[in-house]
Length: 255
Image (cartoon, rainbow, N blue to C red):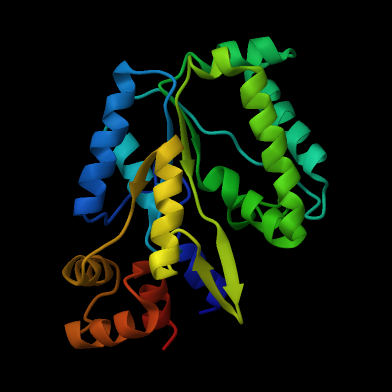
């Protein structure tokens, strides 16, 4: 089986894709955080976790079990070297097209009618869903430090329309990825004390829910997806890959 096929197999990309889910302590905390949105507005929640921990599966499973109206914008970019300004404008164009409106005011009015606006895999990883598209994560990998201008545009937009943002809830699946050699790391979870400092500062401005697992939870998740595998084999994989079920499942299938 090709590596790409294995990666896609263990990657969750929609609210409907939640089979074989295992409830963990992280999930329970996330569920409680999201449930509060039903009666609140103006919240921005960042969901963090190392690559391979299943942030998407936790988000989608939680939302599927809530009576929520959720809008999940799709990132529809074709040029992985596009400028930050172009990307920023394309996001607004996509949302405007979804709602059949033209003005920024109309866009925000439509968004405020939802319990939550979700930026997860249909935004970050559309290239796994449609090979003709470039997901946000692929674009950031391609342009590197130039993405800082995009974030500056987002901050400016928030300040400019702060009163509109107080009428909506935004949920981000958040990862700041760093490549060392061919391995992918997350700045919020893979660098020990430095990661804790980063999370501390993030919590000063936003609500944060972290997805991480104990060893027994990791073993249970892997065994749910890969049949007839011994616990000791999974423990050896944990030592090599960390408590990251998706990477462990990929390694076991690619043996």
